[in-house]
Image (tube, rainbow, N blue to C red):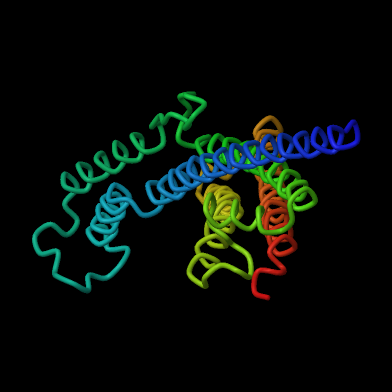
Length: 269
């Protein structure tokens, strides 16, 4: 009788343990979903920041006025239409140059709020703020994924592979070899978009520095050591963020996909 009671208690204890692990797995999967949603939102804000700086209509307005001034000064030939009586008109040129300066000042001096952090920063530092927030979210995503994997593997030992398979299929979207092609493409695109964004931010900084270096008068700033220290620090931060984004993103993808493939290896049998 004592032996049967002991076996019953062991079975009951194992059942409770499996239930606790199952709930922990589902909870971690929910947090993973939320982390992915917030991360994707932050990444979209980052790409909009790039658009605002390099592809927005304000940029087109500056380029349009700059082109008109160049034509009126005779620096470039007119191809679409003739400048007519405005050619060489100093008043028109001065008015357009004033508008260009005002538009560029608004763009350069604009302030934005970093998502989640709530910090108001100049537009030039927005890329670093977005990258840091996205990096911290990706680290949390990696933490939740590892917790999910630990729970699923423990469930696999307690009750077999069918329970982890059901948890993944009913509570989360598969991204490994058992997922549909569209879901695999979507998951890869989401994870690759973060390191791509940080690399584009770094390329943007390099391009801005090259433009400054090629601009008359502004290039003299490179002769001043404090400015060189700021530039070097900014580039170092950009390189570090780019490297970390690639490393953490690859770890996230491999962590989840490896565990998923291991746990669902019998699903097609």
